[in-house]
Image (tube, rainbow, N blue to C red):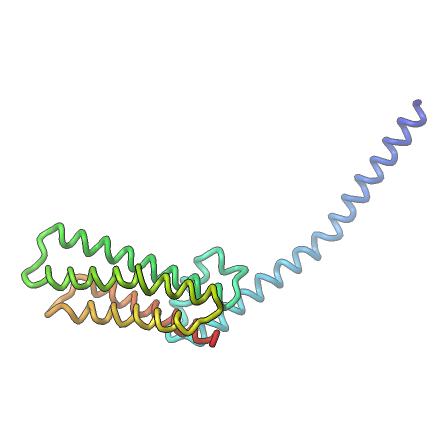
Length: 187
């Protein structure tokens, strides 16, 4: 019995040693593969963003999203559609806050119109873009991104004089233009 237990302990120790040796030897390979994958995806982001009208903005938003690390171009486009969605929601919150306060004379109508435009981005453009990208038919996603840019520009033009939404509108326009350019790469 003692011999059998010693033999089991010996075999178990050798198995553990073998596993530890394999793990030690495989770690550099796994690290190299992981590094290559990350570098390749960083290159995909860089190459993709170079083909947009605002490289720095594109890189900023894509690198900020953890899903970009394993995304293809379609996945990068979906990330940017989600940025459009977030910006539209934020703009609507700001519009509602401005309407709850005391808008300057003539701004109430413009804010209401902008609210409708940003709502259209949320209920029509974003869902259409997501559905078309998921179906592999990116043409409608291009149309949706372009429409979001148009809606933001139109909102800005609703104001006679200073708009309280200039930063939101410019930001939406720029993000939508980047999104459109990325989606066009899929055509």
